[in-house]
Image 1 (cartoon, rainbow, N blue to C red):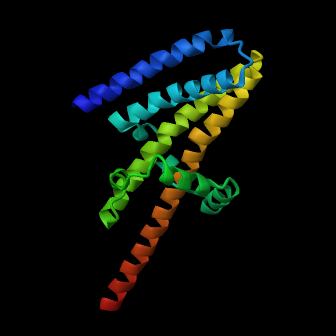
Image 2 (cartoon, one colour):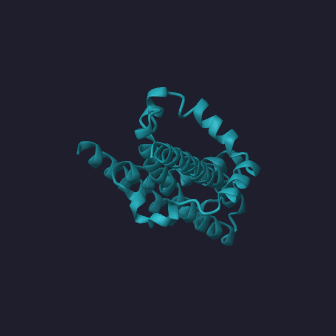
Image 3 (cartoon, rainbow, N blue to C red):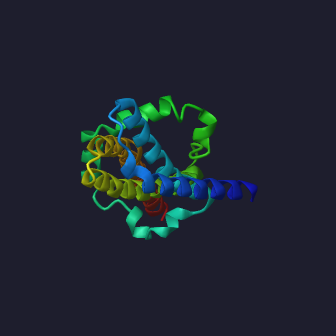
Length: 196
């Protein structure tokens, strides 16, 4: 319960900070690349953090319809995954943020039962990146409209890597889970027919 309260407060704090940042962003006038990159990173961090903390505290993935999470065109997803080289992104995550094996086991412990948990965590993660991705894209359009082109471009690039790539990665995870489940079902049906 205490954890939920802390995560909710953190989410609300970042929501307030995001609101204040967006109110004053039209006064941003730096031409220093470091400051532009830092401002874009903060913008992405605050907006994404609102939904990340909320997703850690509550089952926010349930806000999207269940059919949203099903993979209707796996071949297209595989193609996008390959073209964008999302696997390099996955390897980078495993080498840095997900280096700790005990942290990985909270999402998938290697068991059959763990696959269901991985699927739920995948949906949570995707939803936690989908909404910020959409909001930040809208903010970037606004930044371009008011002439903050460098800030808009860097914000868009950070958003692409920080939110779009994780969305594709999570959808790819669920596509692989669906393949595993279909194989398991066909194995079970073969076993059932041979026993009869």
